[in-house]
Image: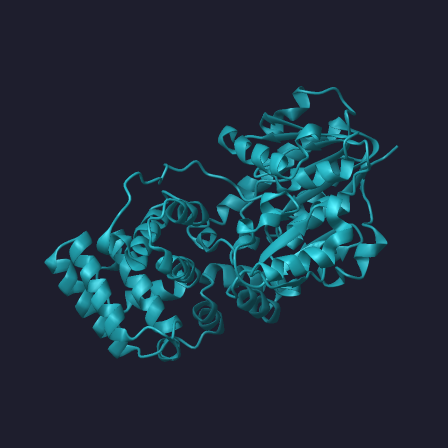
Length: 470
């Protein structure tokens, strides 16, 4: 679970018109908010689309401009620094406008340069003034003339292999060096290339409909959502185009949107019908739903999250998926849940811990912004506090899954290793044999897997299965 930060609301009340309702203007506004740390990209994009702040014909372009500019932010930033003498003093909204204009020139083929520049100048005048318009015109024309292609820019930079890879894949240089130290340069190249590929939407089929998977797949395709089966999660479909949240199958609770790698945490925990399970860090509720499907109507899932404003998301998910009768949702800090229950209260525990979210760089490209390596040790401390606090609540012979959506050593295996060193009553438990062969590239050992983005073209994810000794 990615670490959450409380942000100022970016909701807009007045519906724009004219130029302000264009894809490029709204993309600039969204990027400005994200760069200033006032919004998460997925939440802001949803706000803009749900409030019809762009016209129907511009929705796809708006989304592509926002996510594409963010995905290539590191490279575009380095590029603009070559032509802006006062880069750091340039207004954030203007940098956002220049960046999305550069993205169109260097990474999109269908938009002619004159259209990119003319629209950017109009926006700069509208958002700023005539001077800003002239500045935008001169900057973009100079940039496109100096570096006609992105390859021209990269080839003129230092030949250091780390910096070149960083520019080619827009993975910040510090992360290229971190991954190289951890995995080696060849694997880092594969990770970086995978992280810049477009993220696919995955749907998980409700346990009640597993027998109808072929029919559901065909129904989605008929509704305009072509798909294929996941290679690692047997009841997941990878949707090639479109947003399946708009499908009738989603609205009826037959499918839900969940990354295939993330869904493995619950599959590997494998709770039984009638079990009482703790979901310690539950928002937004995808895994809560999964747990409830496993334990059935005779079981119980107690879902907690520290963020009270996230609880309605969990409630909406469990209700839509028809498992609300077996789920209890409460606000609570996972590092203090040990005070709420007697020892040995649960058959199973899921700790999908707050983390850096590095495994989500492709799906949530804004997570690449302002990552501080010092945070990794701080997060490790929080993760261990949670495990230390909830572990006494597990029954003997009960199973605990620790999972994260990151691929850093500090938050994954190091956490498990340190926890086991201080808890002799816990041991690693080999995951089911049905998973061993399928997940072989990601296995650290028989009980832990670390899925890297290039392994299965999915999010990066870590899962460790532990058992409390009898």
